[in-house]
Image (cartoon, rainbow, N blue to C red; front, side, top):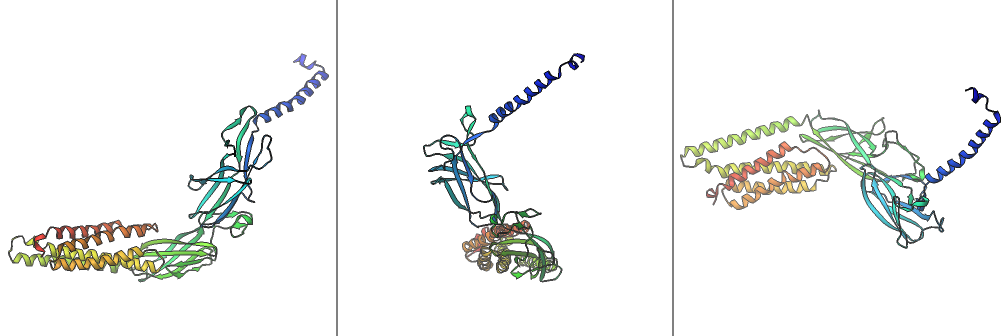
Length: 421
């Protein structure tokens, strides 16, 4: 410690100056080794790297490819083929790879999305006119640290409306009051700020809440409340389950169709009493028919009831088809796309009822068995398809009960060959 303190001041100063003068040299050498250079660069020429538009709207994206290393540095790359990777950031999956030609060095293309999504467009490969492949991972000149390709990506938001159910009132028979909240699907709660040229509507701030939209609930115009984005309407409803269709439209935007369903408290008891009364009537009819045949003391009296029992069950399955046909007609009139449910339900009801009459009269067993197939299908497939197309819950208990009734009818009639003539 004492020797260090005796070191001349001039010697210490010289050491300090040598250290500070050589340090920048080492820093520059390190930076030169770590800073990568690229033979080709493909960058977007659009004014914004993030853009926002509506579902179904075409958006033009443009890029430019140019050399950034070697003798051609600064020149555009003509007659090359670039691969643009389109990925969904919301689903985190690859959508497709686009192959485009850089005839003059700059190239553009139109793109649209039929569904709401945030898509990222990134150039992943360039094939020059001489066939040389440049991509981000390949090292063309490892000695000089020169890589193949660098590029900047572009992100485009294709947005749509989102409708959520706020509340509903089913305490009045024949009427349902529905309140919904309408927002844009992809926008964050705090909204989004972009340059006006980067948005379809030339807005700089995009709010989450949809204000002043045209909202129809079961075809009736909904009224926006004092709270922006909250819309309410009272609509007629006569079924035990309320099926609500909400259509939202706005200038320049594609109309969206959203469905909701829930039990109707006021209508439910009437339908329940109707089902109980009809079930009791059918059971009594079955009992009386069986007792009347037993009194004749004919052998195989129970089997002689098969055409009658089968016909009654077929009639019940046909009436169930009529119920779903009425649901389909009512839903179609109010905005649902349930045409298939309407048509199949009505055909099933008409032919099924015809088969039930033929079975009761013990005529044309083959035709009767054919008509059973219609309620068997119509009370399951189109109902499930129609409800699931709007992401509505499927009443599987009711559908399985209808299916069991149709199957029971078919088993009874198919095992009564000698009873038909």
